[in-house]
Image (cartoon, rainbow, N blue to C red):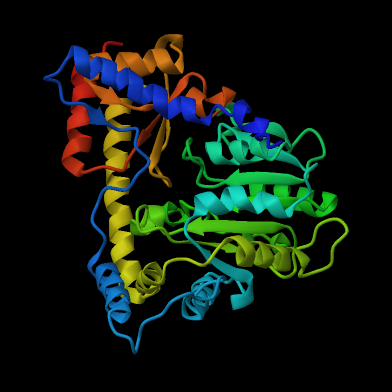
Length: 397
């Protein structure tokens, strides 16, 4: 008799966004003429840059000619794109080989699927608050989860786990808080992982938003990280590929876990991908090559500057009226402390009703997110400015 995986019943991930939709729908039904201003979305809004569009068009054109048509590709990714990544990392002082880079259809699926190559009894440590997929994937797999609290007191960067764990998720710049870990802070995690033969899953999806040269963009800037860390990244947030879908995961050959030799974890991830993944879109990968070109990177830097100016507008506006905010300097998210001890959902309703602005309640990212609201810099400039002006004018503090 077939049964279902009851671990799915333990998930709460769908509650946050479905409840946001429900509450905004109720508000709009009561106020049909009001235009809502959305600062909660974690989705890019600006058009793909000219170089990227050209690259994607080249990819499409190749499929229109039998002489250049391609079907299934290498599950690990186009060798040209992997080679371009080797050069990209080399410029940052990081030495990798093409066999250590795996092209995917985005960071989110890899963040969840990577758990499948580790033992079912692995204890997983996750920052609180955190991107929900880390927790949900662990719950679905029936694994034990422990939380590393991220609070104002520790700068929203977690301290080391209080107990022995096997896998640690670190997201820097962090979604939702916008906090960025220093080299010294990451070194502590690397040292812990090496001492306990644990693994760091480093989510660097927002790394290109870091403008401070003293802050690390890759875990591999930390001595010893290649022996204990997997890095997951994506084109989504810095090249606008949220809909195009393209990311990559780095699994160093030097990486080891308890009871294995060098290369084993790399080979397991390769086996997983060969078994369950047919490779990223050929078209998207040509677009990825365009992103990594000199002109493509220049254009994407300009896109990042645009979004970070949005972040500055939001942050300055909130500070102006006396609100306490974090982030928004090396990440596209603003982590807003709710005023007057309001809960996350109470302040969500207040912001919606008084300013007609939609944010994302911090409690939806974990218990330590209670009392905060996440605001996003992704949006058209005129919408960002209108939302901030509405908050400044209408929010009653």
